[in-house]
Length: 511
Image (cartoon, rainbow, N blue to C red):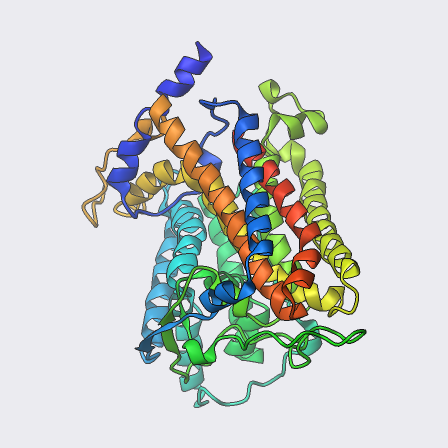
C-alpha cells in the first residue's frame, strides 16, 4: 500500500515539467526523494559504475589526438561589450533590497514569502545550472558592482583607481573557503535556513560585509578571491558551452615526451591564483565550445582553490547523506521520532566537516598514488591543481540530481509568491493566483522519469569528468600511456563516487 501511495504521489511530474519549462529549479528541503525503483537499485549502481569504467578504458586505448582537438575546438561568436554591467548590477541590487524587505515585513511562511524561494530556488539552484550551461551570468547580476561603481563616482575615484589597501596574495582562496563553509553550515545545519526574517538578516549582513571589503580592497580582487559565490560561479562557468576566447586562445598542445628522469609538465604552468574574472574595462571574445572544454583548458589551482572545489562537491553530497536513514541511525536518531534540526546541530556540523575531509583525503590520495605509478611526473601538488577541474562535472551532476525533484514544486511556489511579496492580496505580475501542481511529483511514470534523469546526470557527469581528467593528464605527462596509468586511482575514485551518488538518490530520507 505504501508503494502504491508513493507511485500515486509522483503521477504528474512529466506534466509539471512541461508546465514549468525552463522555470527555476528549487531548494530540496521541501521535497521528498527515495523512490521505489522499477529495477533493483543494484542494477542502476552496477550499470553506472560499468559506464564510467568503460569510458576510462576506451579513453585509455584511443589515441589522444582526437580528444585533444575536441577540447581545443572553438567557434568565435564575437566580442561582448561590458558597458551595461553597472546597470544590470544596480537592477539586481534593487531586486535584492525588495526581497530583503519582503523577508522582514512579509509572511514567515517559507512557501509564501518570495525571499527564501527566490534565494534557494531561483538563485542558488537555478542560476548555478544556467551558469554551467550558458556562461557566467553572475558577473552581470551580482548586486555589488553597480553600487560600488556609484560609490567610486561619488568619491571621484575612477574605476581603475588603486584601492586603499591590497589584498595579500598569500591568502589565495582561503577567505572564499571560509565564507562558503559558513554558507554550507547555514544551509545544512542551522535550524531555520528557510525562515524569511532570519534569512533576510543573514543576507543583509553578507552584502554589507562584502561591500565593505570591495571598498577597501577593490571590487576585482575581492570577487576573485573572497566573495565565495563570485568564485564559485566563475569556476562553474568553465563547464559552459559559451565561454571566452577562440581556438587560437585555447590551451597549447601537450609537451613532448619527457626525457628519462625529467619532470613531464610544462614549466610555464605554475601554481598561482588564476584570474577567474575580467576587469570591467575588458571586452572578452565569446566562443562556442564543447561542455567541459573550459575546465580542461583552465590553469592549475593552488591548494586553496582545490579545496574550494572539493568543498562545493562535498556539501551537496552531505546534504543528501544527512537525510538518509543510514545517517540518522549512525547518529542515534529514530527517523519516526525526528527531534528537529536544533537537536542535530553538533552531529551535523561534525558530519559536514568529516564529509569535506574525507573527499579531500580521497582526492589527494588518488592523485598522489597516480603520480607514484608514473615516476618523473609533475608531482602530486601540481597534478591535483590541474586535475581538480575534472571534479566540476561531478559537482554539477549532483547539484542537478539532488535538487531535481524539488525544482518542480518550489519553482511553482516562487512564481506565485513574487506577485504578493508581503502577503497583502497583491497581484503585481498576474501570478498570485497560480495553482501549484502539488501532484507534479507523484506517480509511477514520474518516478521513472525523475530517477532516470538523475541517474543519467550522475553517470554522464562522471563520464565527462573522466574525459576531462584524461585530457589534463595527457597535457601533464605528454604521453598517452603514462597519462592513462596516472589516472587509474582517480578513475577508481570516480567509479566509487558514482555508486555512492546513485545510492544516495535511491535511499529513503527521514526529513
